[in-house]
Image (cartoon, rainbow, N blue to C red; front, top):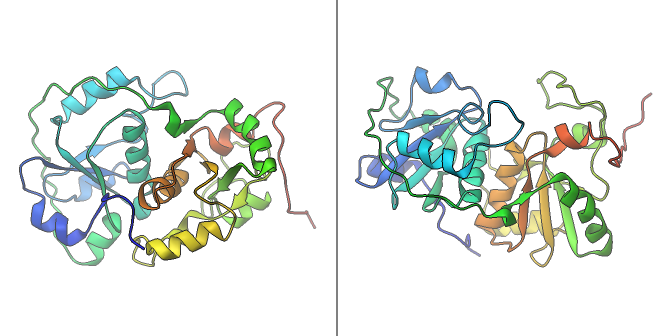
Length: 286
């Protein structure tokens, strides 16, 4: 079984094609300062929060604002946009999902991300990439890729009936409610621990190899179908603020070809603090 879409490129491919006309590299890291310490030649930097989030509301910038931003990066319609970053491509996958949600085409991920490139001893440069601003075309959002809080609440009934699935991609301790944060991360202001009722615990990292690359399509299919997350179901993935769930969304929709997969970007920071929203918690304090 092969991946359904041609959305991955190898580090070898990037090394060979990074200077090709129409190929543009975009680095998206959790650590926004990492790019400045060294990046792949020709890559431009995207700040997942500063560039994609509205500065006032807890919401994304508009499609019109995104189009203008992509033009500022010198990107053009028809360019092949290769995304990569740290944390096994968490934030590159987040950018991939957000750009897909806004209708951007010709997206790919560099398999293994920044960690694989560095582990292979490949060159990084500190010279900023020069760009010539362009006029990026207007974008149109695809709301079928995004789930909102009230839609998730209604989705619980679909899970109970067997028509839908919820995938919680956080760590097992976050899922159980023992902690409200990732390992080695601080508590982040969520009032309640646990998970959305009916969710299946499938941590994002189960989809990757030690070098950060994705497991085979057969392995991935077995991972999700073994938890009852099958292509015939309407699937919603979530985590803390949607970076890890973007990674799992990419696996399900782009690699395995599941037809109905949405990313709940509000995720646990919204759900765990939401008034009137039900939770399940399996961890019991000693």
